[in-house]
Image 1: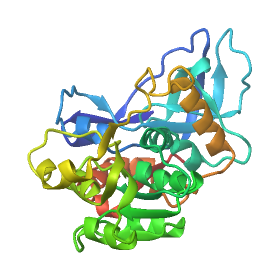
Image 2: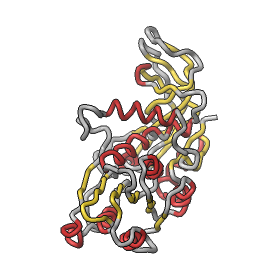
Image 3: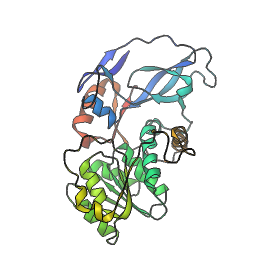
Image 4: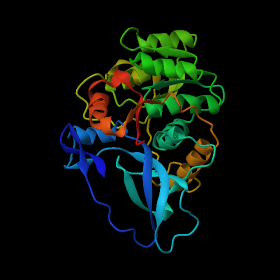
Length: 323
């Protein structure tokens, strides 16, 4: 059996492994589909910050149970489940950490669980309210779910900003009001023009690009909110807080769903966020089919992973099929 591993920075390979015995409270899952993530995973893969190798590559896997250990209740052989883990042909997981897929649920909805968690943090911490004008910067998987959530939250206007045409088109297909290519237009000016000169009420920045954060602040209405969801690196340019920030008085809100205590503690915490996001995905509230694109066979995953890193314009969230 094989698993996808980085043996050194930017060197992905398929490597042999052997399964360990299934222990008490564990189940073994035969993986059928999976997906890596961008952001923090690619940061580690590139050895940008504190990485160690070999490193498993991938974020979530979906499959069916093939073996059950002692003490496991509520699961049966053949059940479809999902869990966090790198791309490999089998996973041995604790049963209490498994996510059960409803009969109607697709694997693409399941692997969008992680981005949905952090999109919800951006929406809630950004305080999107009925009638607001909202702009989402960065249209990876988190941004794609965020634009859908903004509509769910009652935003009257949603703009989506990304330099990659494939991602902008996916946002158009779920009903955003405007898409902007920051390499060809002044995003802040376009947002002001679209809101009768006032600017947007809430900006949600998911790209971790300082240029995007700068445009978010510039395009904001007086006293508006910027929810910083993207995991920023060291700032070496692209951000000029002296240009307009002291005049339009933005509220910079750093949002990270898994950081407890939550801003709405004790009513909301990481456990509640996880529960509601899985419920919504199970109910089919988000369009995930176009987000997980392209889908490649597992044997082609090393080359596809390199492509995800070097050619972001070709994918939104890479999917991997094991059959």
